Length: 389
Picture 1 (cartoon, helix red, strand yellow):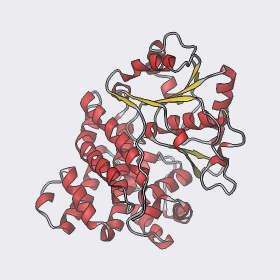
Picture 2 (cartoon, one colour):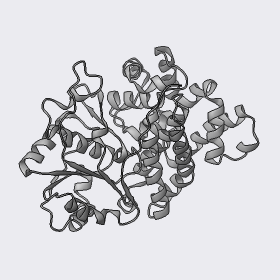
Picture 3 (spheres, helix red, strand yellow):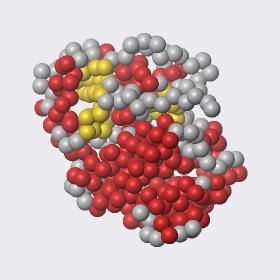
């Protein structure tokens, strides 16, 4: 039997008020001049000012020029801010984009070259072989789970092609997962990020790779999200639902050590070609890809139906339960206000059949579908996108 290495090392402080532990934690590590890395939206909210008040005795600066999907220039500008402040630590505060950029800034603070030269698939990939500044993470959305991830996704400013920098050294030294930081998320963002978390758990479980630890985490992540996501969207002040979604989000990110699938390849293509929000792209595509996956993942989808609490799934045949799970995903999308198709999406940049060749070019070259339960060819992606439009 092949030897497989498992690792779940991140220290997590979870619960309402966890953000108030950050200052004492950093001081105990000898940190005096942290740089907060966040996005433009959070920079305008009372949340940031309130967080400042929870950091007494520290000389804090803020870098907040992050928006949309992370790009190289945001990292470069953040590194300049880090050096200008003479910072000795990075505090990532925000959703997946802010946390990914925070990791990249921490990496590039002491490493030479360009951030994209550290992407795992670069032909002359640089080694991550120097000490990095102390890095802690505070998520403000319940979606990507980037706070517990060991990767940073950054795009080229011109091509928008996403590149993945992957290393255990990118893991936060400590995570402060405070559901109170997610209470002000609007319903649409709650829905999109929540579908991202659900997709991570679903695709991780369906991956054919061997990782029973991740399977157990992914199934529980689905169970939690199935019940909590509708509540978090309908009643944003429901602290229990917000807590549950934050946990499901982290579980999805831990589970996808096992790898993901074709939903993410499609979503990465949509982000690259149409600049679509990653969570929304996953939400739109998930049931379309699951219908494609059905012949190769019937038993696992039946289990997902039972875990998600799909009505009648326990007494159904495997095939019926698997189909019921896909139908449940479609109903969940409708209830959350996620468009059923790309064509139904209200956007300044509509996705049409004319985009399919470009979308397929990106999706087929994306690595996520390599661990999809059913192998995907170019023709398969063409059919998936056509059905989704």
